[in-house]
Length: 108
View 1 (tube, rainbow, N blue to C red):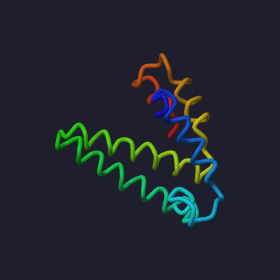
View 2 (cartoon, helix red, strand yellow; view 1 turned 60 degrees about the horizontal axis):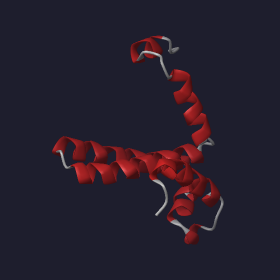
View 3 (tube, one colour; view 1 turned 135 degrees about the vertical axis):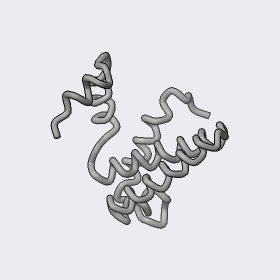
C-alpha cells in the first residue's frame, strides 16, 4: 500500500495517464471518452451520495463516498483540461485569506 499523503497526486496522475486510452481498458478512460458533460453528471451524482451519507452520519460510508467525489472531481476537471496543480495553486492563493474576504473579492 502506498503512502496516503500522496494519494490524490497519484490519482490525478493516473487519471491524466488514462486520458486517450482505449475505453475498454479502464473505467476512467471510458468515462473520459463520454465527454466533460457526462463526467460532470457523474461528479454530481457522487456529490449527492456523499451528502446523503453525511446526513445519515455513517462515517465509513461518508469516507467511501468522499473518495468517490474526489476521484470524480479530478476526472471532471481533467475532462476540461484543469490539472491538480492548477487547483492546488488556487488553494495556495487563498491560503491565509478569510473565506468571507475571498468571496467578497470574487467578480460577479
